[in-house]
Length: 204
Ligand code: GRF
Image (tube, rainbow, N blue to C red):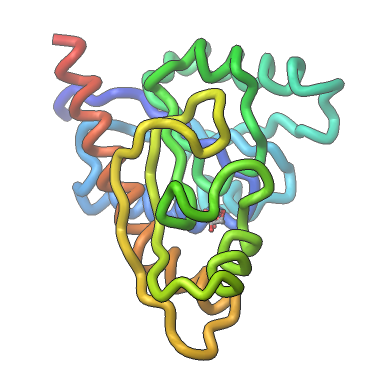
């Protein structure tokens, strides 16, 4: 097996983006990195089942059980260090990371957001709320963005975007599904491979 960087995927819910990453590792779309661990902020996340089915180590750092964000992030850092992680991928991860955390892992954290940033992003724009905002504004095109994570919610450098048409009578749920299928699940694996390849080059 050729040299690969170590990837951690952080999740909170259904894990459809994690599934896209697992499938991309199996199909060879991702070949410069290996998912070493999935870390969930919730013990109920279906993403944990997907990790188990994919034979991938998983851990829970239960946000609700932690005494504040510092303790929560310390629990995550412990796992990242134990697993010697090079790249952190936020895939449906519903927690805002502190400035200290994003600086500690500067240019090593990427996130998928379900809109074409800078539209419909930042504080309060997550999950279905993003699609509700797009529909109520009346935009004809939306999509997804993969970006580096910094201290500004959805503010880091953009890596990749993919546009998705909005159809007549779209509901937020229907639109979310289309954006996931036609954009998120395509550009997140491609972005992970792009960044992993760059990180491998930096090693040499
Ligand atoms: C997706 O819309 C993703 O863009 C957002 O969270 C939703 C659920 O993601 N960040 P997943 O199914 O848990 O990967």
